[in-house]
Amino acid sequence: MSKRLILIDLSGLFWASWHATVDQEVSAAFERTVSRVHSLREGYDLCAVCVDAPPYKRKEISKDYKAQRDAPPPQALEQLERVKARLDADGLLLWSAKGFEADDVIATAVVYASRDGLFTTIASSDKDLYS
Image 1 (cartoon, rainbow, N blue to C red):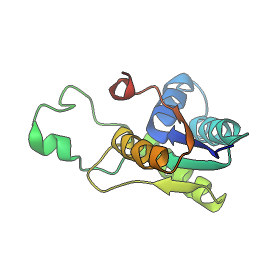
Image 2 (image 1 turned 180 degrees about the horizontal axis):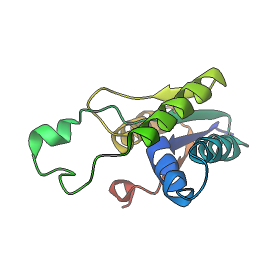
Image 3 (image 1 turned 120 degrees about the vertical axis):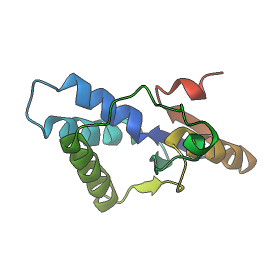
């Protein structure tokens, strides 16, 4: 039986938590995201939390990339950094590649995981990963 790997898109989880907890304490998104990551990884042999690493190369290719989006609130970015630090302290593997988003990291990881015979699950709501 092959090992089971889960690849978790941290950005997708965090921003969903951030928007769902807008009327709560600022730390609610932190708590919700950390809890969700730990819940998702249960039952898997391997887990990688995939993280965005701006500035994005896609922006170099197209200046319009995400141009319609408002800048994220500083307090949200602070909570996201807390989440990453906590997951790292908890011993989870955080994967990122400078200039790339989590979905790019996930897509690359899937190629290598399949070559190694891993059964891989992707936990993401990113439409770029839909086929």
